[in-house]
Length: 142
Image: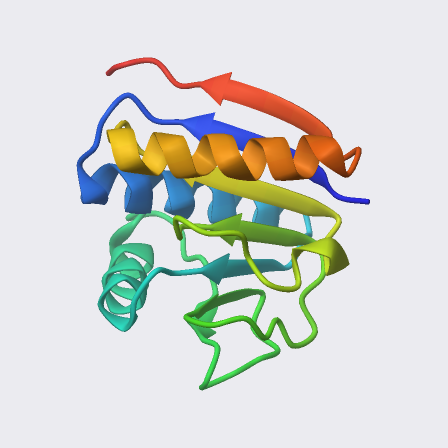
């Protein structure tokens, strides 16, 4: 049963969600985990791909679009298939990720936008009803 962490962002700006996804992917990869980032759209996936290339000037987060290389340490995708990834699922969508139960950890990134917060509350209830270990992280304004 996965551990689920909800990261409540102090901003509704789409770039902040992508920046935080970069930080999570970088940290998890450096700890030896494989990361699957589920994007809400192909455009978001491309934007995250570009951000990961520029994320840190002194380091590189090895990643690929899932359609290019399902074996990458960090895979970015739109859809539901996770390939060989089972460590960490980073969910950037407003919905429940199909196949989430196959991961050890789930990271739900929640921007400060009413409709997205409401969708996150519904996912929280879903996970709680199934007995998943849940944790909220309210991130500070910078």
